[in-house]
Length: 275
Image (cartoon, rainbow, N blue to C red; front, side, top):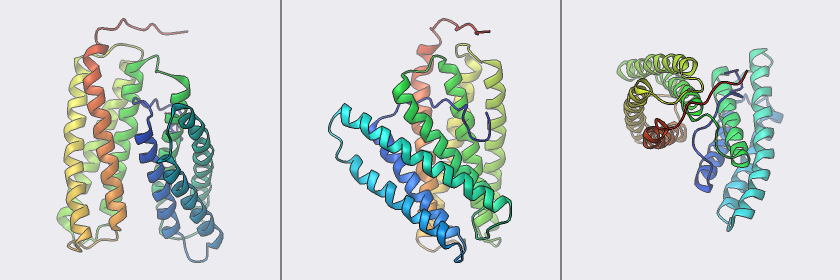
């Protein structure tokens, strides 16, 4: 999987509710970027505001979709917007890495949200291409993507908590290590199970991933509630805390879908490799 996640194969199919989920995520990304820019980055702030308005408008229009034909046309409009914000995110990341701008946006955070834009593009492509030919490939690559993002979330939380919050910082770092290990395990499975049907190792792994994601979901929920009530010292805005919580809940939905389908997949014939 390259740095842009072009090789990720989203497992779930796109529907209007998921589109609305991702539109909100993209909108909030624009806001977080804007808040992280230095006051002197006037043009970048303006562009981030424009992206916020674009995705807010798309989010509102999504509530007016009434038929499949309208949905497909809407997907085409969204695709253009997502490609544009992806390019903007990569441009900003380049500026940060080259020390051309300051601000408080972590480079890894900008990389993280650009990967999510690419993932959204993959979902938009999937609705046009139909079902995946290699279900195991899509299951494992989706796990690699989301496990990496759960680890990123834990690292961001640890970095934005005040150092005096030693217990929470330690918990966040523990979650980061746990999800980084799961991601490495998923990469091994990606190699070993490529083009094969699921086996018991994959079933067990999905259970481990689900249990870990439930735990970090609960941790994020507790953190969000404490931040909202001003009961924890941190630099984490309440919206960001809620944002990462919603993404953990989204990953759990995908894991539930995978678990339901795994048994049926075990009965499918092996797909041979193409040389």
